[in-house]
Amino acid sequence: MTVSPRARARLSILALALLAAGCTTTPRGPVTLNLVAINDFHGNLEPSKYTYTSAATGKSETLRAGGIEALSGALAAWRKEDKDLLFIGAGDLIGASPALSSMWADEPSIEAMNLLGLRLSSVGNHEFDQGRKELLRQQAGGCDSPRPGKACRLSPDYRGARFTYLAANVLDSATGKPFMPAYRVEDVKGVKVGVAGAVLQGTASVAVASAIAGLDFIDEADAINKTLPQMRADGAKVFIALIHEGGRTDESPDQPGCKGLTGGVVDIVKKLDPAIRLVITGHSHQGYLCTVDGRVVTQADAAGHLLSRIALKVDASSGAIADIDVKNVVMDPAKFPADPQVSAYLAGVKERSRAALARPLGKLGTATVARRANEAGESPLGNLIADAVLAATRAQGAQIGFMNNGGIRKDLETSDAALTTNFGHAQAVLPFGNTLVVLDLTGAQLRRLLEQQWQRPSASGATILQVSQGLSYTWDEKRPIGQRLVPGSLKFNGKPVDDNQTYRVVANNFLAEGGDNFPEFAKGTKRVDTQIVDLDALSEYIARNPGAGGAQAGLAPSTRIDKVRTPQ
Image (cartoon, rainbow, N blue to C red; front, side, top):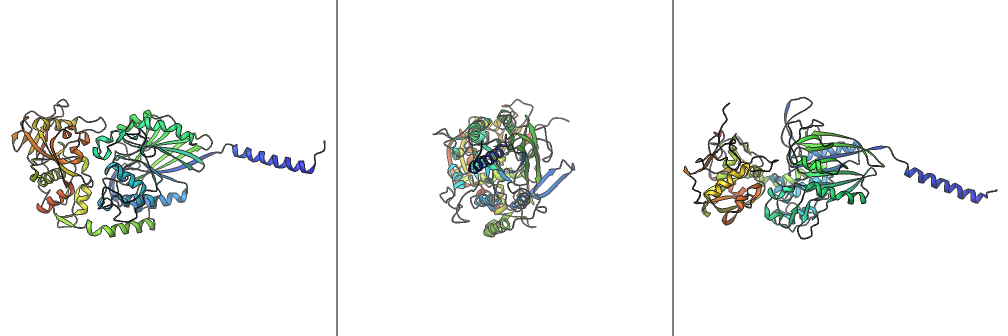
């Protein structure tokens, strides 16, 4: 049979088309996907003190680490190695922030993450500090804020986050659907990567109740697992979980393959779908590179002290992960020269903030009033704050002041040899802007409240409330939970607390609503929100009491809270 030239041409074209089609379906070799993860940045635009023990040397190291300049330098260097690097987060990027960020409604930290090229982050509990409306504004931009004195003051046209917050397990109570995206699918080197995000289910215990009204927090693993069919339908073949819940380990932050992780995230990881091989965590402010149930579980400390570098070796066709290599890298500013654009931005924010931060408040009695507690659970800074909130509300009848340790974010430092402290230092201690609430509790309720210090969820451990001068007690860890107060030891102004007497107490609005797993506060009566901000109360107390904090610097064990000691 003779084939005409035109037919031969058609056959040649068909053969080429079939060959091309065959090429597109030929499995590609393995590809390496490079990720960098951050968690619990908390608005730390500048470096801060970081102490860790290196697995490589076994030695303790202390340096000032983090800050957006070091982060920018590291990311720029790593992007030169791989332009497709994916930068992601595990929540608490904002909230509990130093004044340089919080005085501007944390907009500088959002913009910093934009400049650093962040793509995705789970929400953290601190993203809810100012309420649902403010979180949505942080994401989308605009100036309609519950903080009109701070929002859009740095820039009049705040445009929001260019990265996407993920919240698979945070549901709108009215609709039953996630109120923010549950997941995103990213195309990295031709491989579709599904990333789902969640925050700890117990957010209600660490957030102001009014800030999360209308939201339900469901099981983290269940919510993430539910996204897998949707992500697969969108073409994802590799799956990553961002979970703002963490754990603890005694192993070094740069020790790969750690096995000793404990805490809330462990059970969550064990419930995740087997397709999820990588879990990036937060919340516990620890650095670790662990293995749990055959999965890699990472965290990069907090405040930008570390970044987690993660390399996934993936079969491009099937999405099968052949290897996961992880490293926690210390963000030493000396090793990572800053990106000029980021340096210029930080300089601008600092210049706008300088006068407010430097405003002197008064002189302390010591160079640093420490938040670290003694064996009984009492700290010099906790005492100072409890005294300050009491002094600020005596006119409302307050007799006893309380402060939660979790609300004390840093030591109170001084700025010169004369031991002067300023607004910036005080704001770093109390960054939330909580208001003080005065309420009545009976003596019996005071006992129940204090016993709740040891009635904690298993992952969180004991949380000792800081108390004002005049309240004292002794506790014994060998007594049963619910009966740890030594009988007869709970006293007010030297007299035993009477179960039937009413006492007027003051606490910040977070505690007053039952936060931090202290539900007895929420049962208090005759409640008055004074609208006095805790930071203002501390600032005023320092101004009126020269030498504040000095007498408590040594903090004898039985100053206010004592503990029965076990004989050695």
